[in-house]
Image 1 (cartoon, one colour):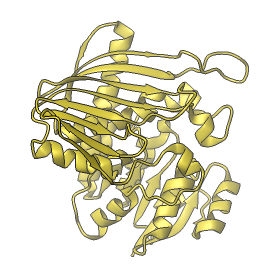
Image 2: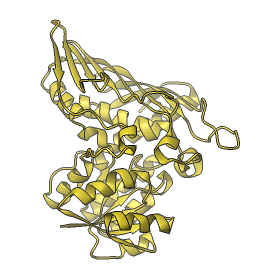
Image 3: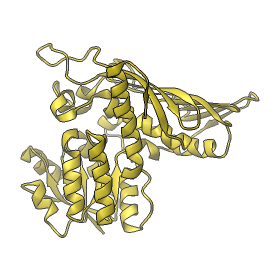
Image 4: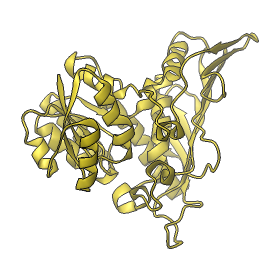
Amino acid sequence: MLNVGMIGCGKIAQLRHLPEYDENPRCAIKALYDTVPERAAEMSGLFGGTPYPSIESILADPQIDAVSVCAANAFHASITIAALDAGKHVLCEKPMATSLEDCERMVAAAERNGRVLMIGHNQRFADSNRVARELVTSGEIGSILSFSSNFGHSGPEQWTGQSNPWFFDRNVALFGAIADLGIHKIDLIHFLTGQTAIEATAIVETLDKKFPDGNPITVDDNAFCILRLSGGAIGTVRASWTFYGQEDNSTRLYGTKGVLRIDDDPEYALILEKKTGECIRYEIGKILTNEEQLAGKKKKSGIIDAFADAILDGTKPISAGSDAIHAMKVVFGALRSSMKRETVVL
């Protein structure tokens, strides 16, 4: 049995981490902490476990085996490193950290303490993406020439139910849509292709979002990235908090033998269009949207189960910190590119 502590009890904990730990028969929620004590108490009533007065008290408890870090971005590294040094396994929400140095320190802490460190790149676990990766690996679309991947919705106000969420504050978030949504698609492109981005050309800006007083938010609400991969493919990743209509969480891979369409069709989660004219439609699960999560759809992301398996069975984590660091390098490179208005070598 894996005894788990929850650090941060906001929406991502409420809709993903806590329900999925609760449904896993090999996990037990034992401790909860939040900067708003009433929130931890409320989640304790729903999912069990005891509200703790501080992060330190959770990390000092020898009965706690692992923690989920669901705090604001600026605190990911310090909490994660402290937890690893206290002998806890860690599942940290994305983005991994707010500097490359902190990302590297997190990975080093996991290695130093012999503990599992996973990052919340949950798109690796979606059925459509897993099967797409298998098709790419087996050569169904040949060599990948280009790609496009989008993740956009109307913003974290919808997700959190708050008009002024911490996501908008540079002091605690550091970055906006590029690391909230774009990080998922950057990591996904790495996962699907087996390659890493080596160049980035990007525009990362605030186009529309405002604080309640009317001033622009202090992080980006849109990111437009052109990436060159280590295998030669060139493509785009777009992240946006200003898609004021239907959510877009789609990806296309264009190869020498065909095209893979992932989560861009209302009926089929994965479509393979071959150069020969043959079209294969896969009846597999579609990726869970924010709207569906907020509506209480009971669909697992898969990441909690994988985290438990990695600890209890010794399986290799699919979204290990050592893999996630590559996507963070792209985020930092895209930010430099946008600031300098030039292509950046990663």
